[in-house]
Length: 145
Ligand SMILES: [Zn+2]
Image (cartoon, rainbow, N blue to C red):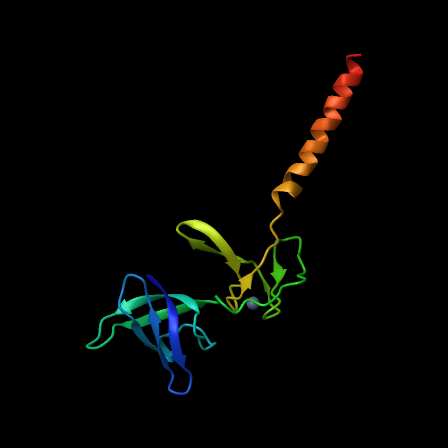
């Protein structure tokens, strides 16, 4: 399985090229794409390489929406961890995209739109513990007097 970025896709002619860091550019047609939605320039995806006389062919192409993330102001979070995708409105469990074996971002498994989860800042994570520590120290101080 290779990873690459759509260099361009001609929707009229139904073909395009995927550029890849370690491989030559791969040619693909819509029939090689395992998604109903046509690709956009700059989309990142995975594919398998098929040799041909000219450019190698990208087959089993799957895209992860890259440059098209919309603003995600509100999302309905359910108790079972599923959320409603603001892009396709489907109930989904966000999938994790890994980069260099580390979780990079999560995305919707239906439309591959990037799913933003608001990370708590370090201050927000630490503040309750500082508050608790001060509280405990205060009571220890009271008890020992
Ligand atoms: Zn979606």
